Image (tube, rainbow, N blue to C red; front, side):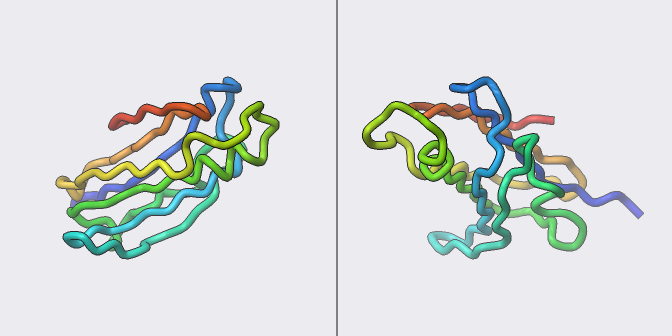
Length: 119
């Protein structure tokens, strides 16, 4: 039997040069314009979720969206800004290979972010 894939993420706080511990992350399955919450997690001390967001029978091809709650994360820190610029960072992507590892990292500061398909 072929091994099933999995979805993982991690967040790096580039403003402070460290993992973004304690950031809320939500995963949604997308069905057209409709979003269905699959899982809600909080990043650990390494900026990662404690386990895969999707794996096994739950890991299926389709359109998904990760939503990172960066506004709440930075508001908990002493960041010299009157009003946060970023509040939520959505990353919409497609899983097409049910046997692959999909890793979606986020590099974030209070004013910008980048993401990519990692390994």
